[in-house]
Length: 91
Ligand SMILES: [Zn+2]
Image 1 (cartoon, protein in one colour):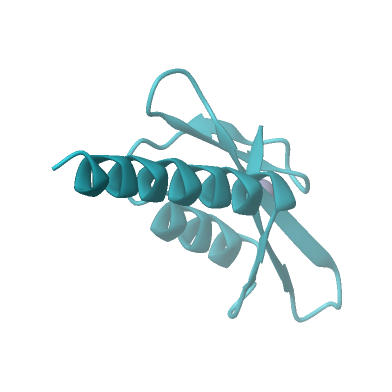
Image 2 (image 1 turned 30 degrees about the vertical axis):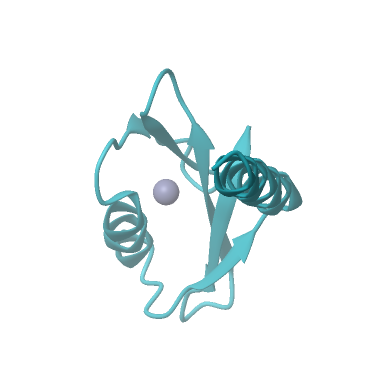
C-alpha cells in the first residue's frame, strides 16, 4: 500500500517522485520513479526520502498523503473512540 509520495523539481525542471510504501510488518519501502531505487527504511523514512531527492538536486519536496492512509487513520480513530466509549459506559 502506497502511504505517501514526495515530489520535487530539480534545476533542469524535471519532476522526481519518491514513494513510501508499507513493507512487511512495520517496515517502510522507498521507491524512486526517477532512478528505480527501492530500499527499506524502517526509521526516519522521510529523512531518507529527502536525502535521496537531494541526489537528484531537488532542494524542496512536497508531501502528498494518499487517501488509503487517511482512511486507515480515520478507521483507527473510530475504533479507539468506540472502545473508550464502551469502557466508560461499562463502569
Ligand atoms: Zn532516485
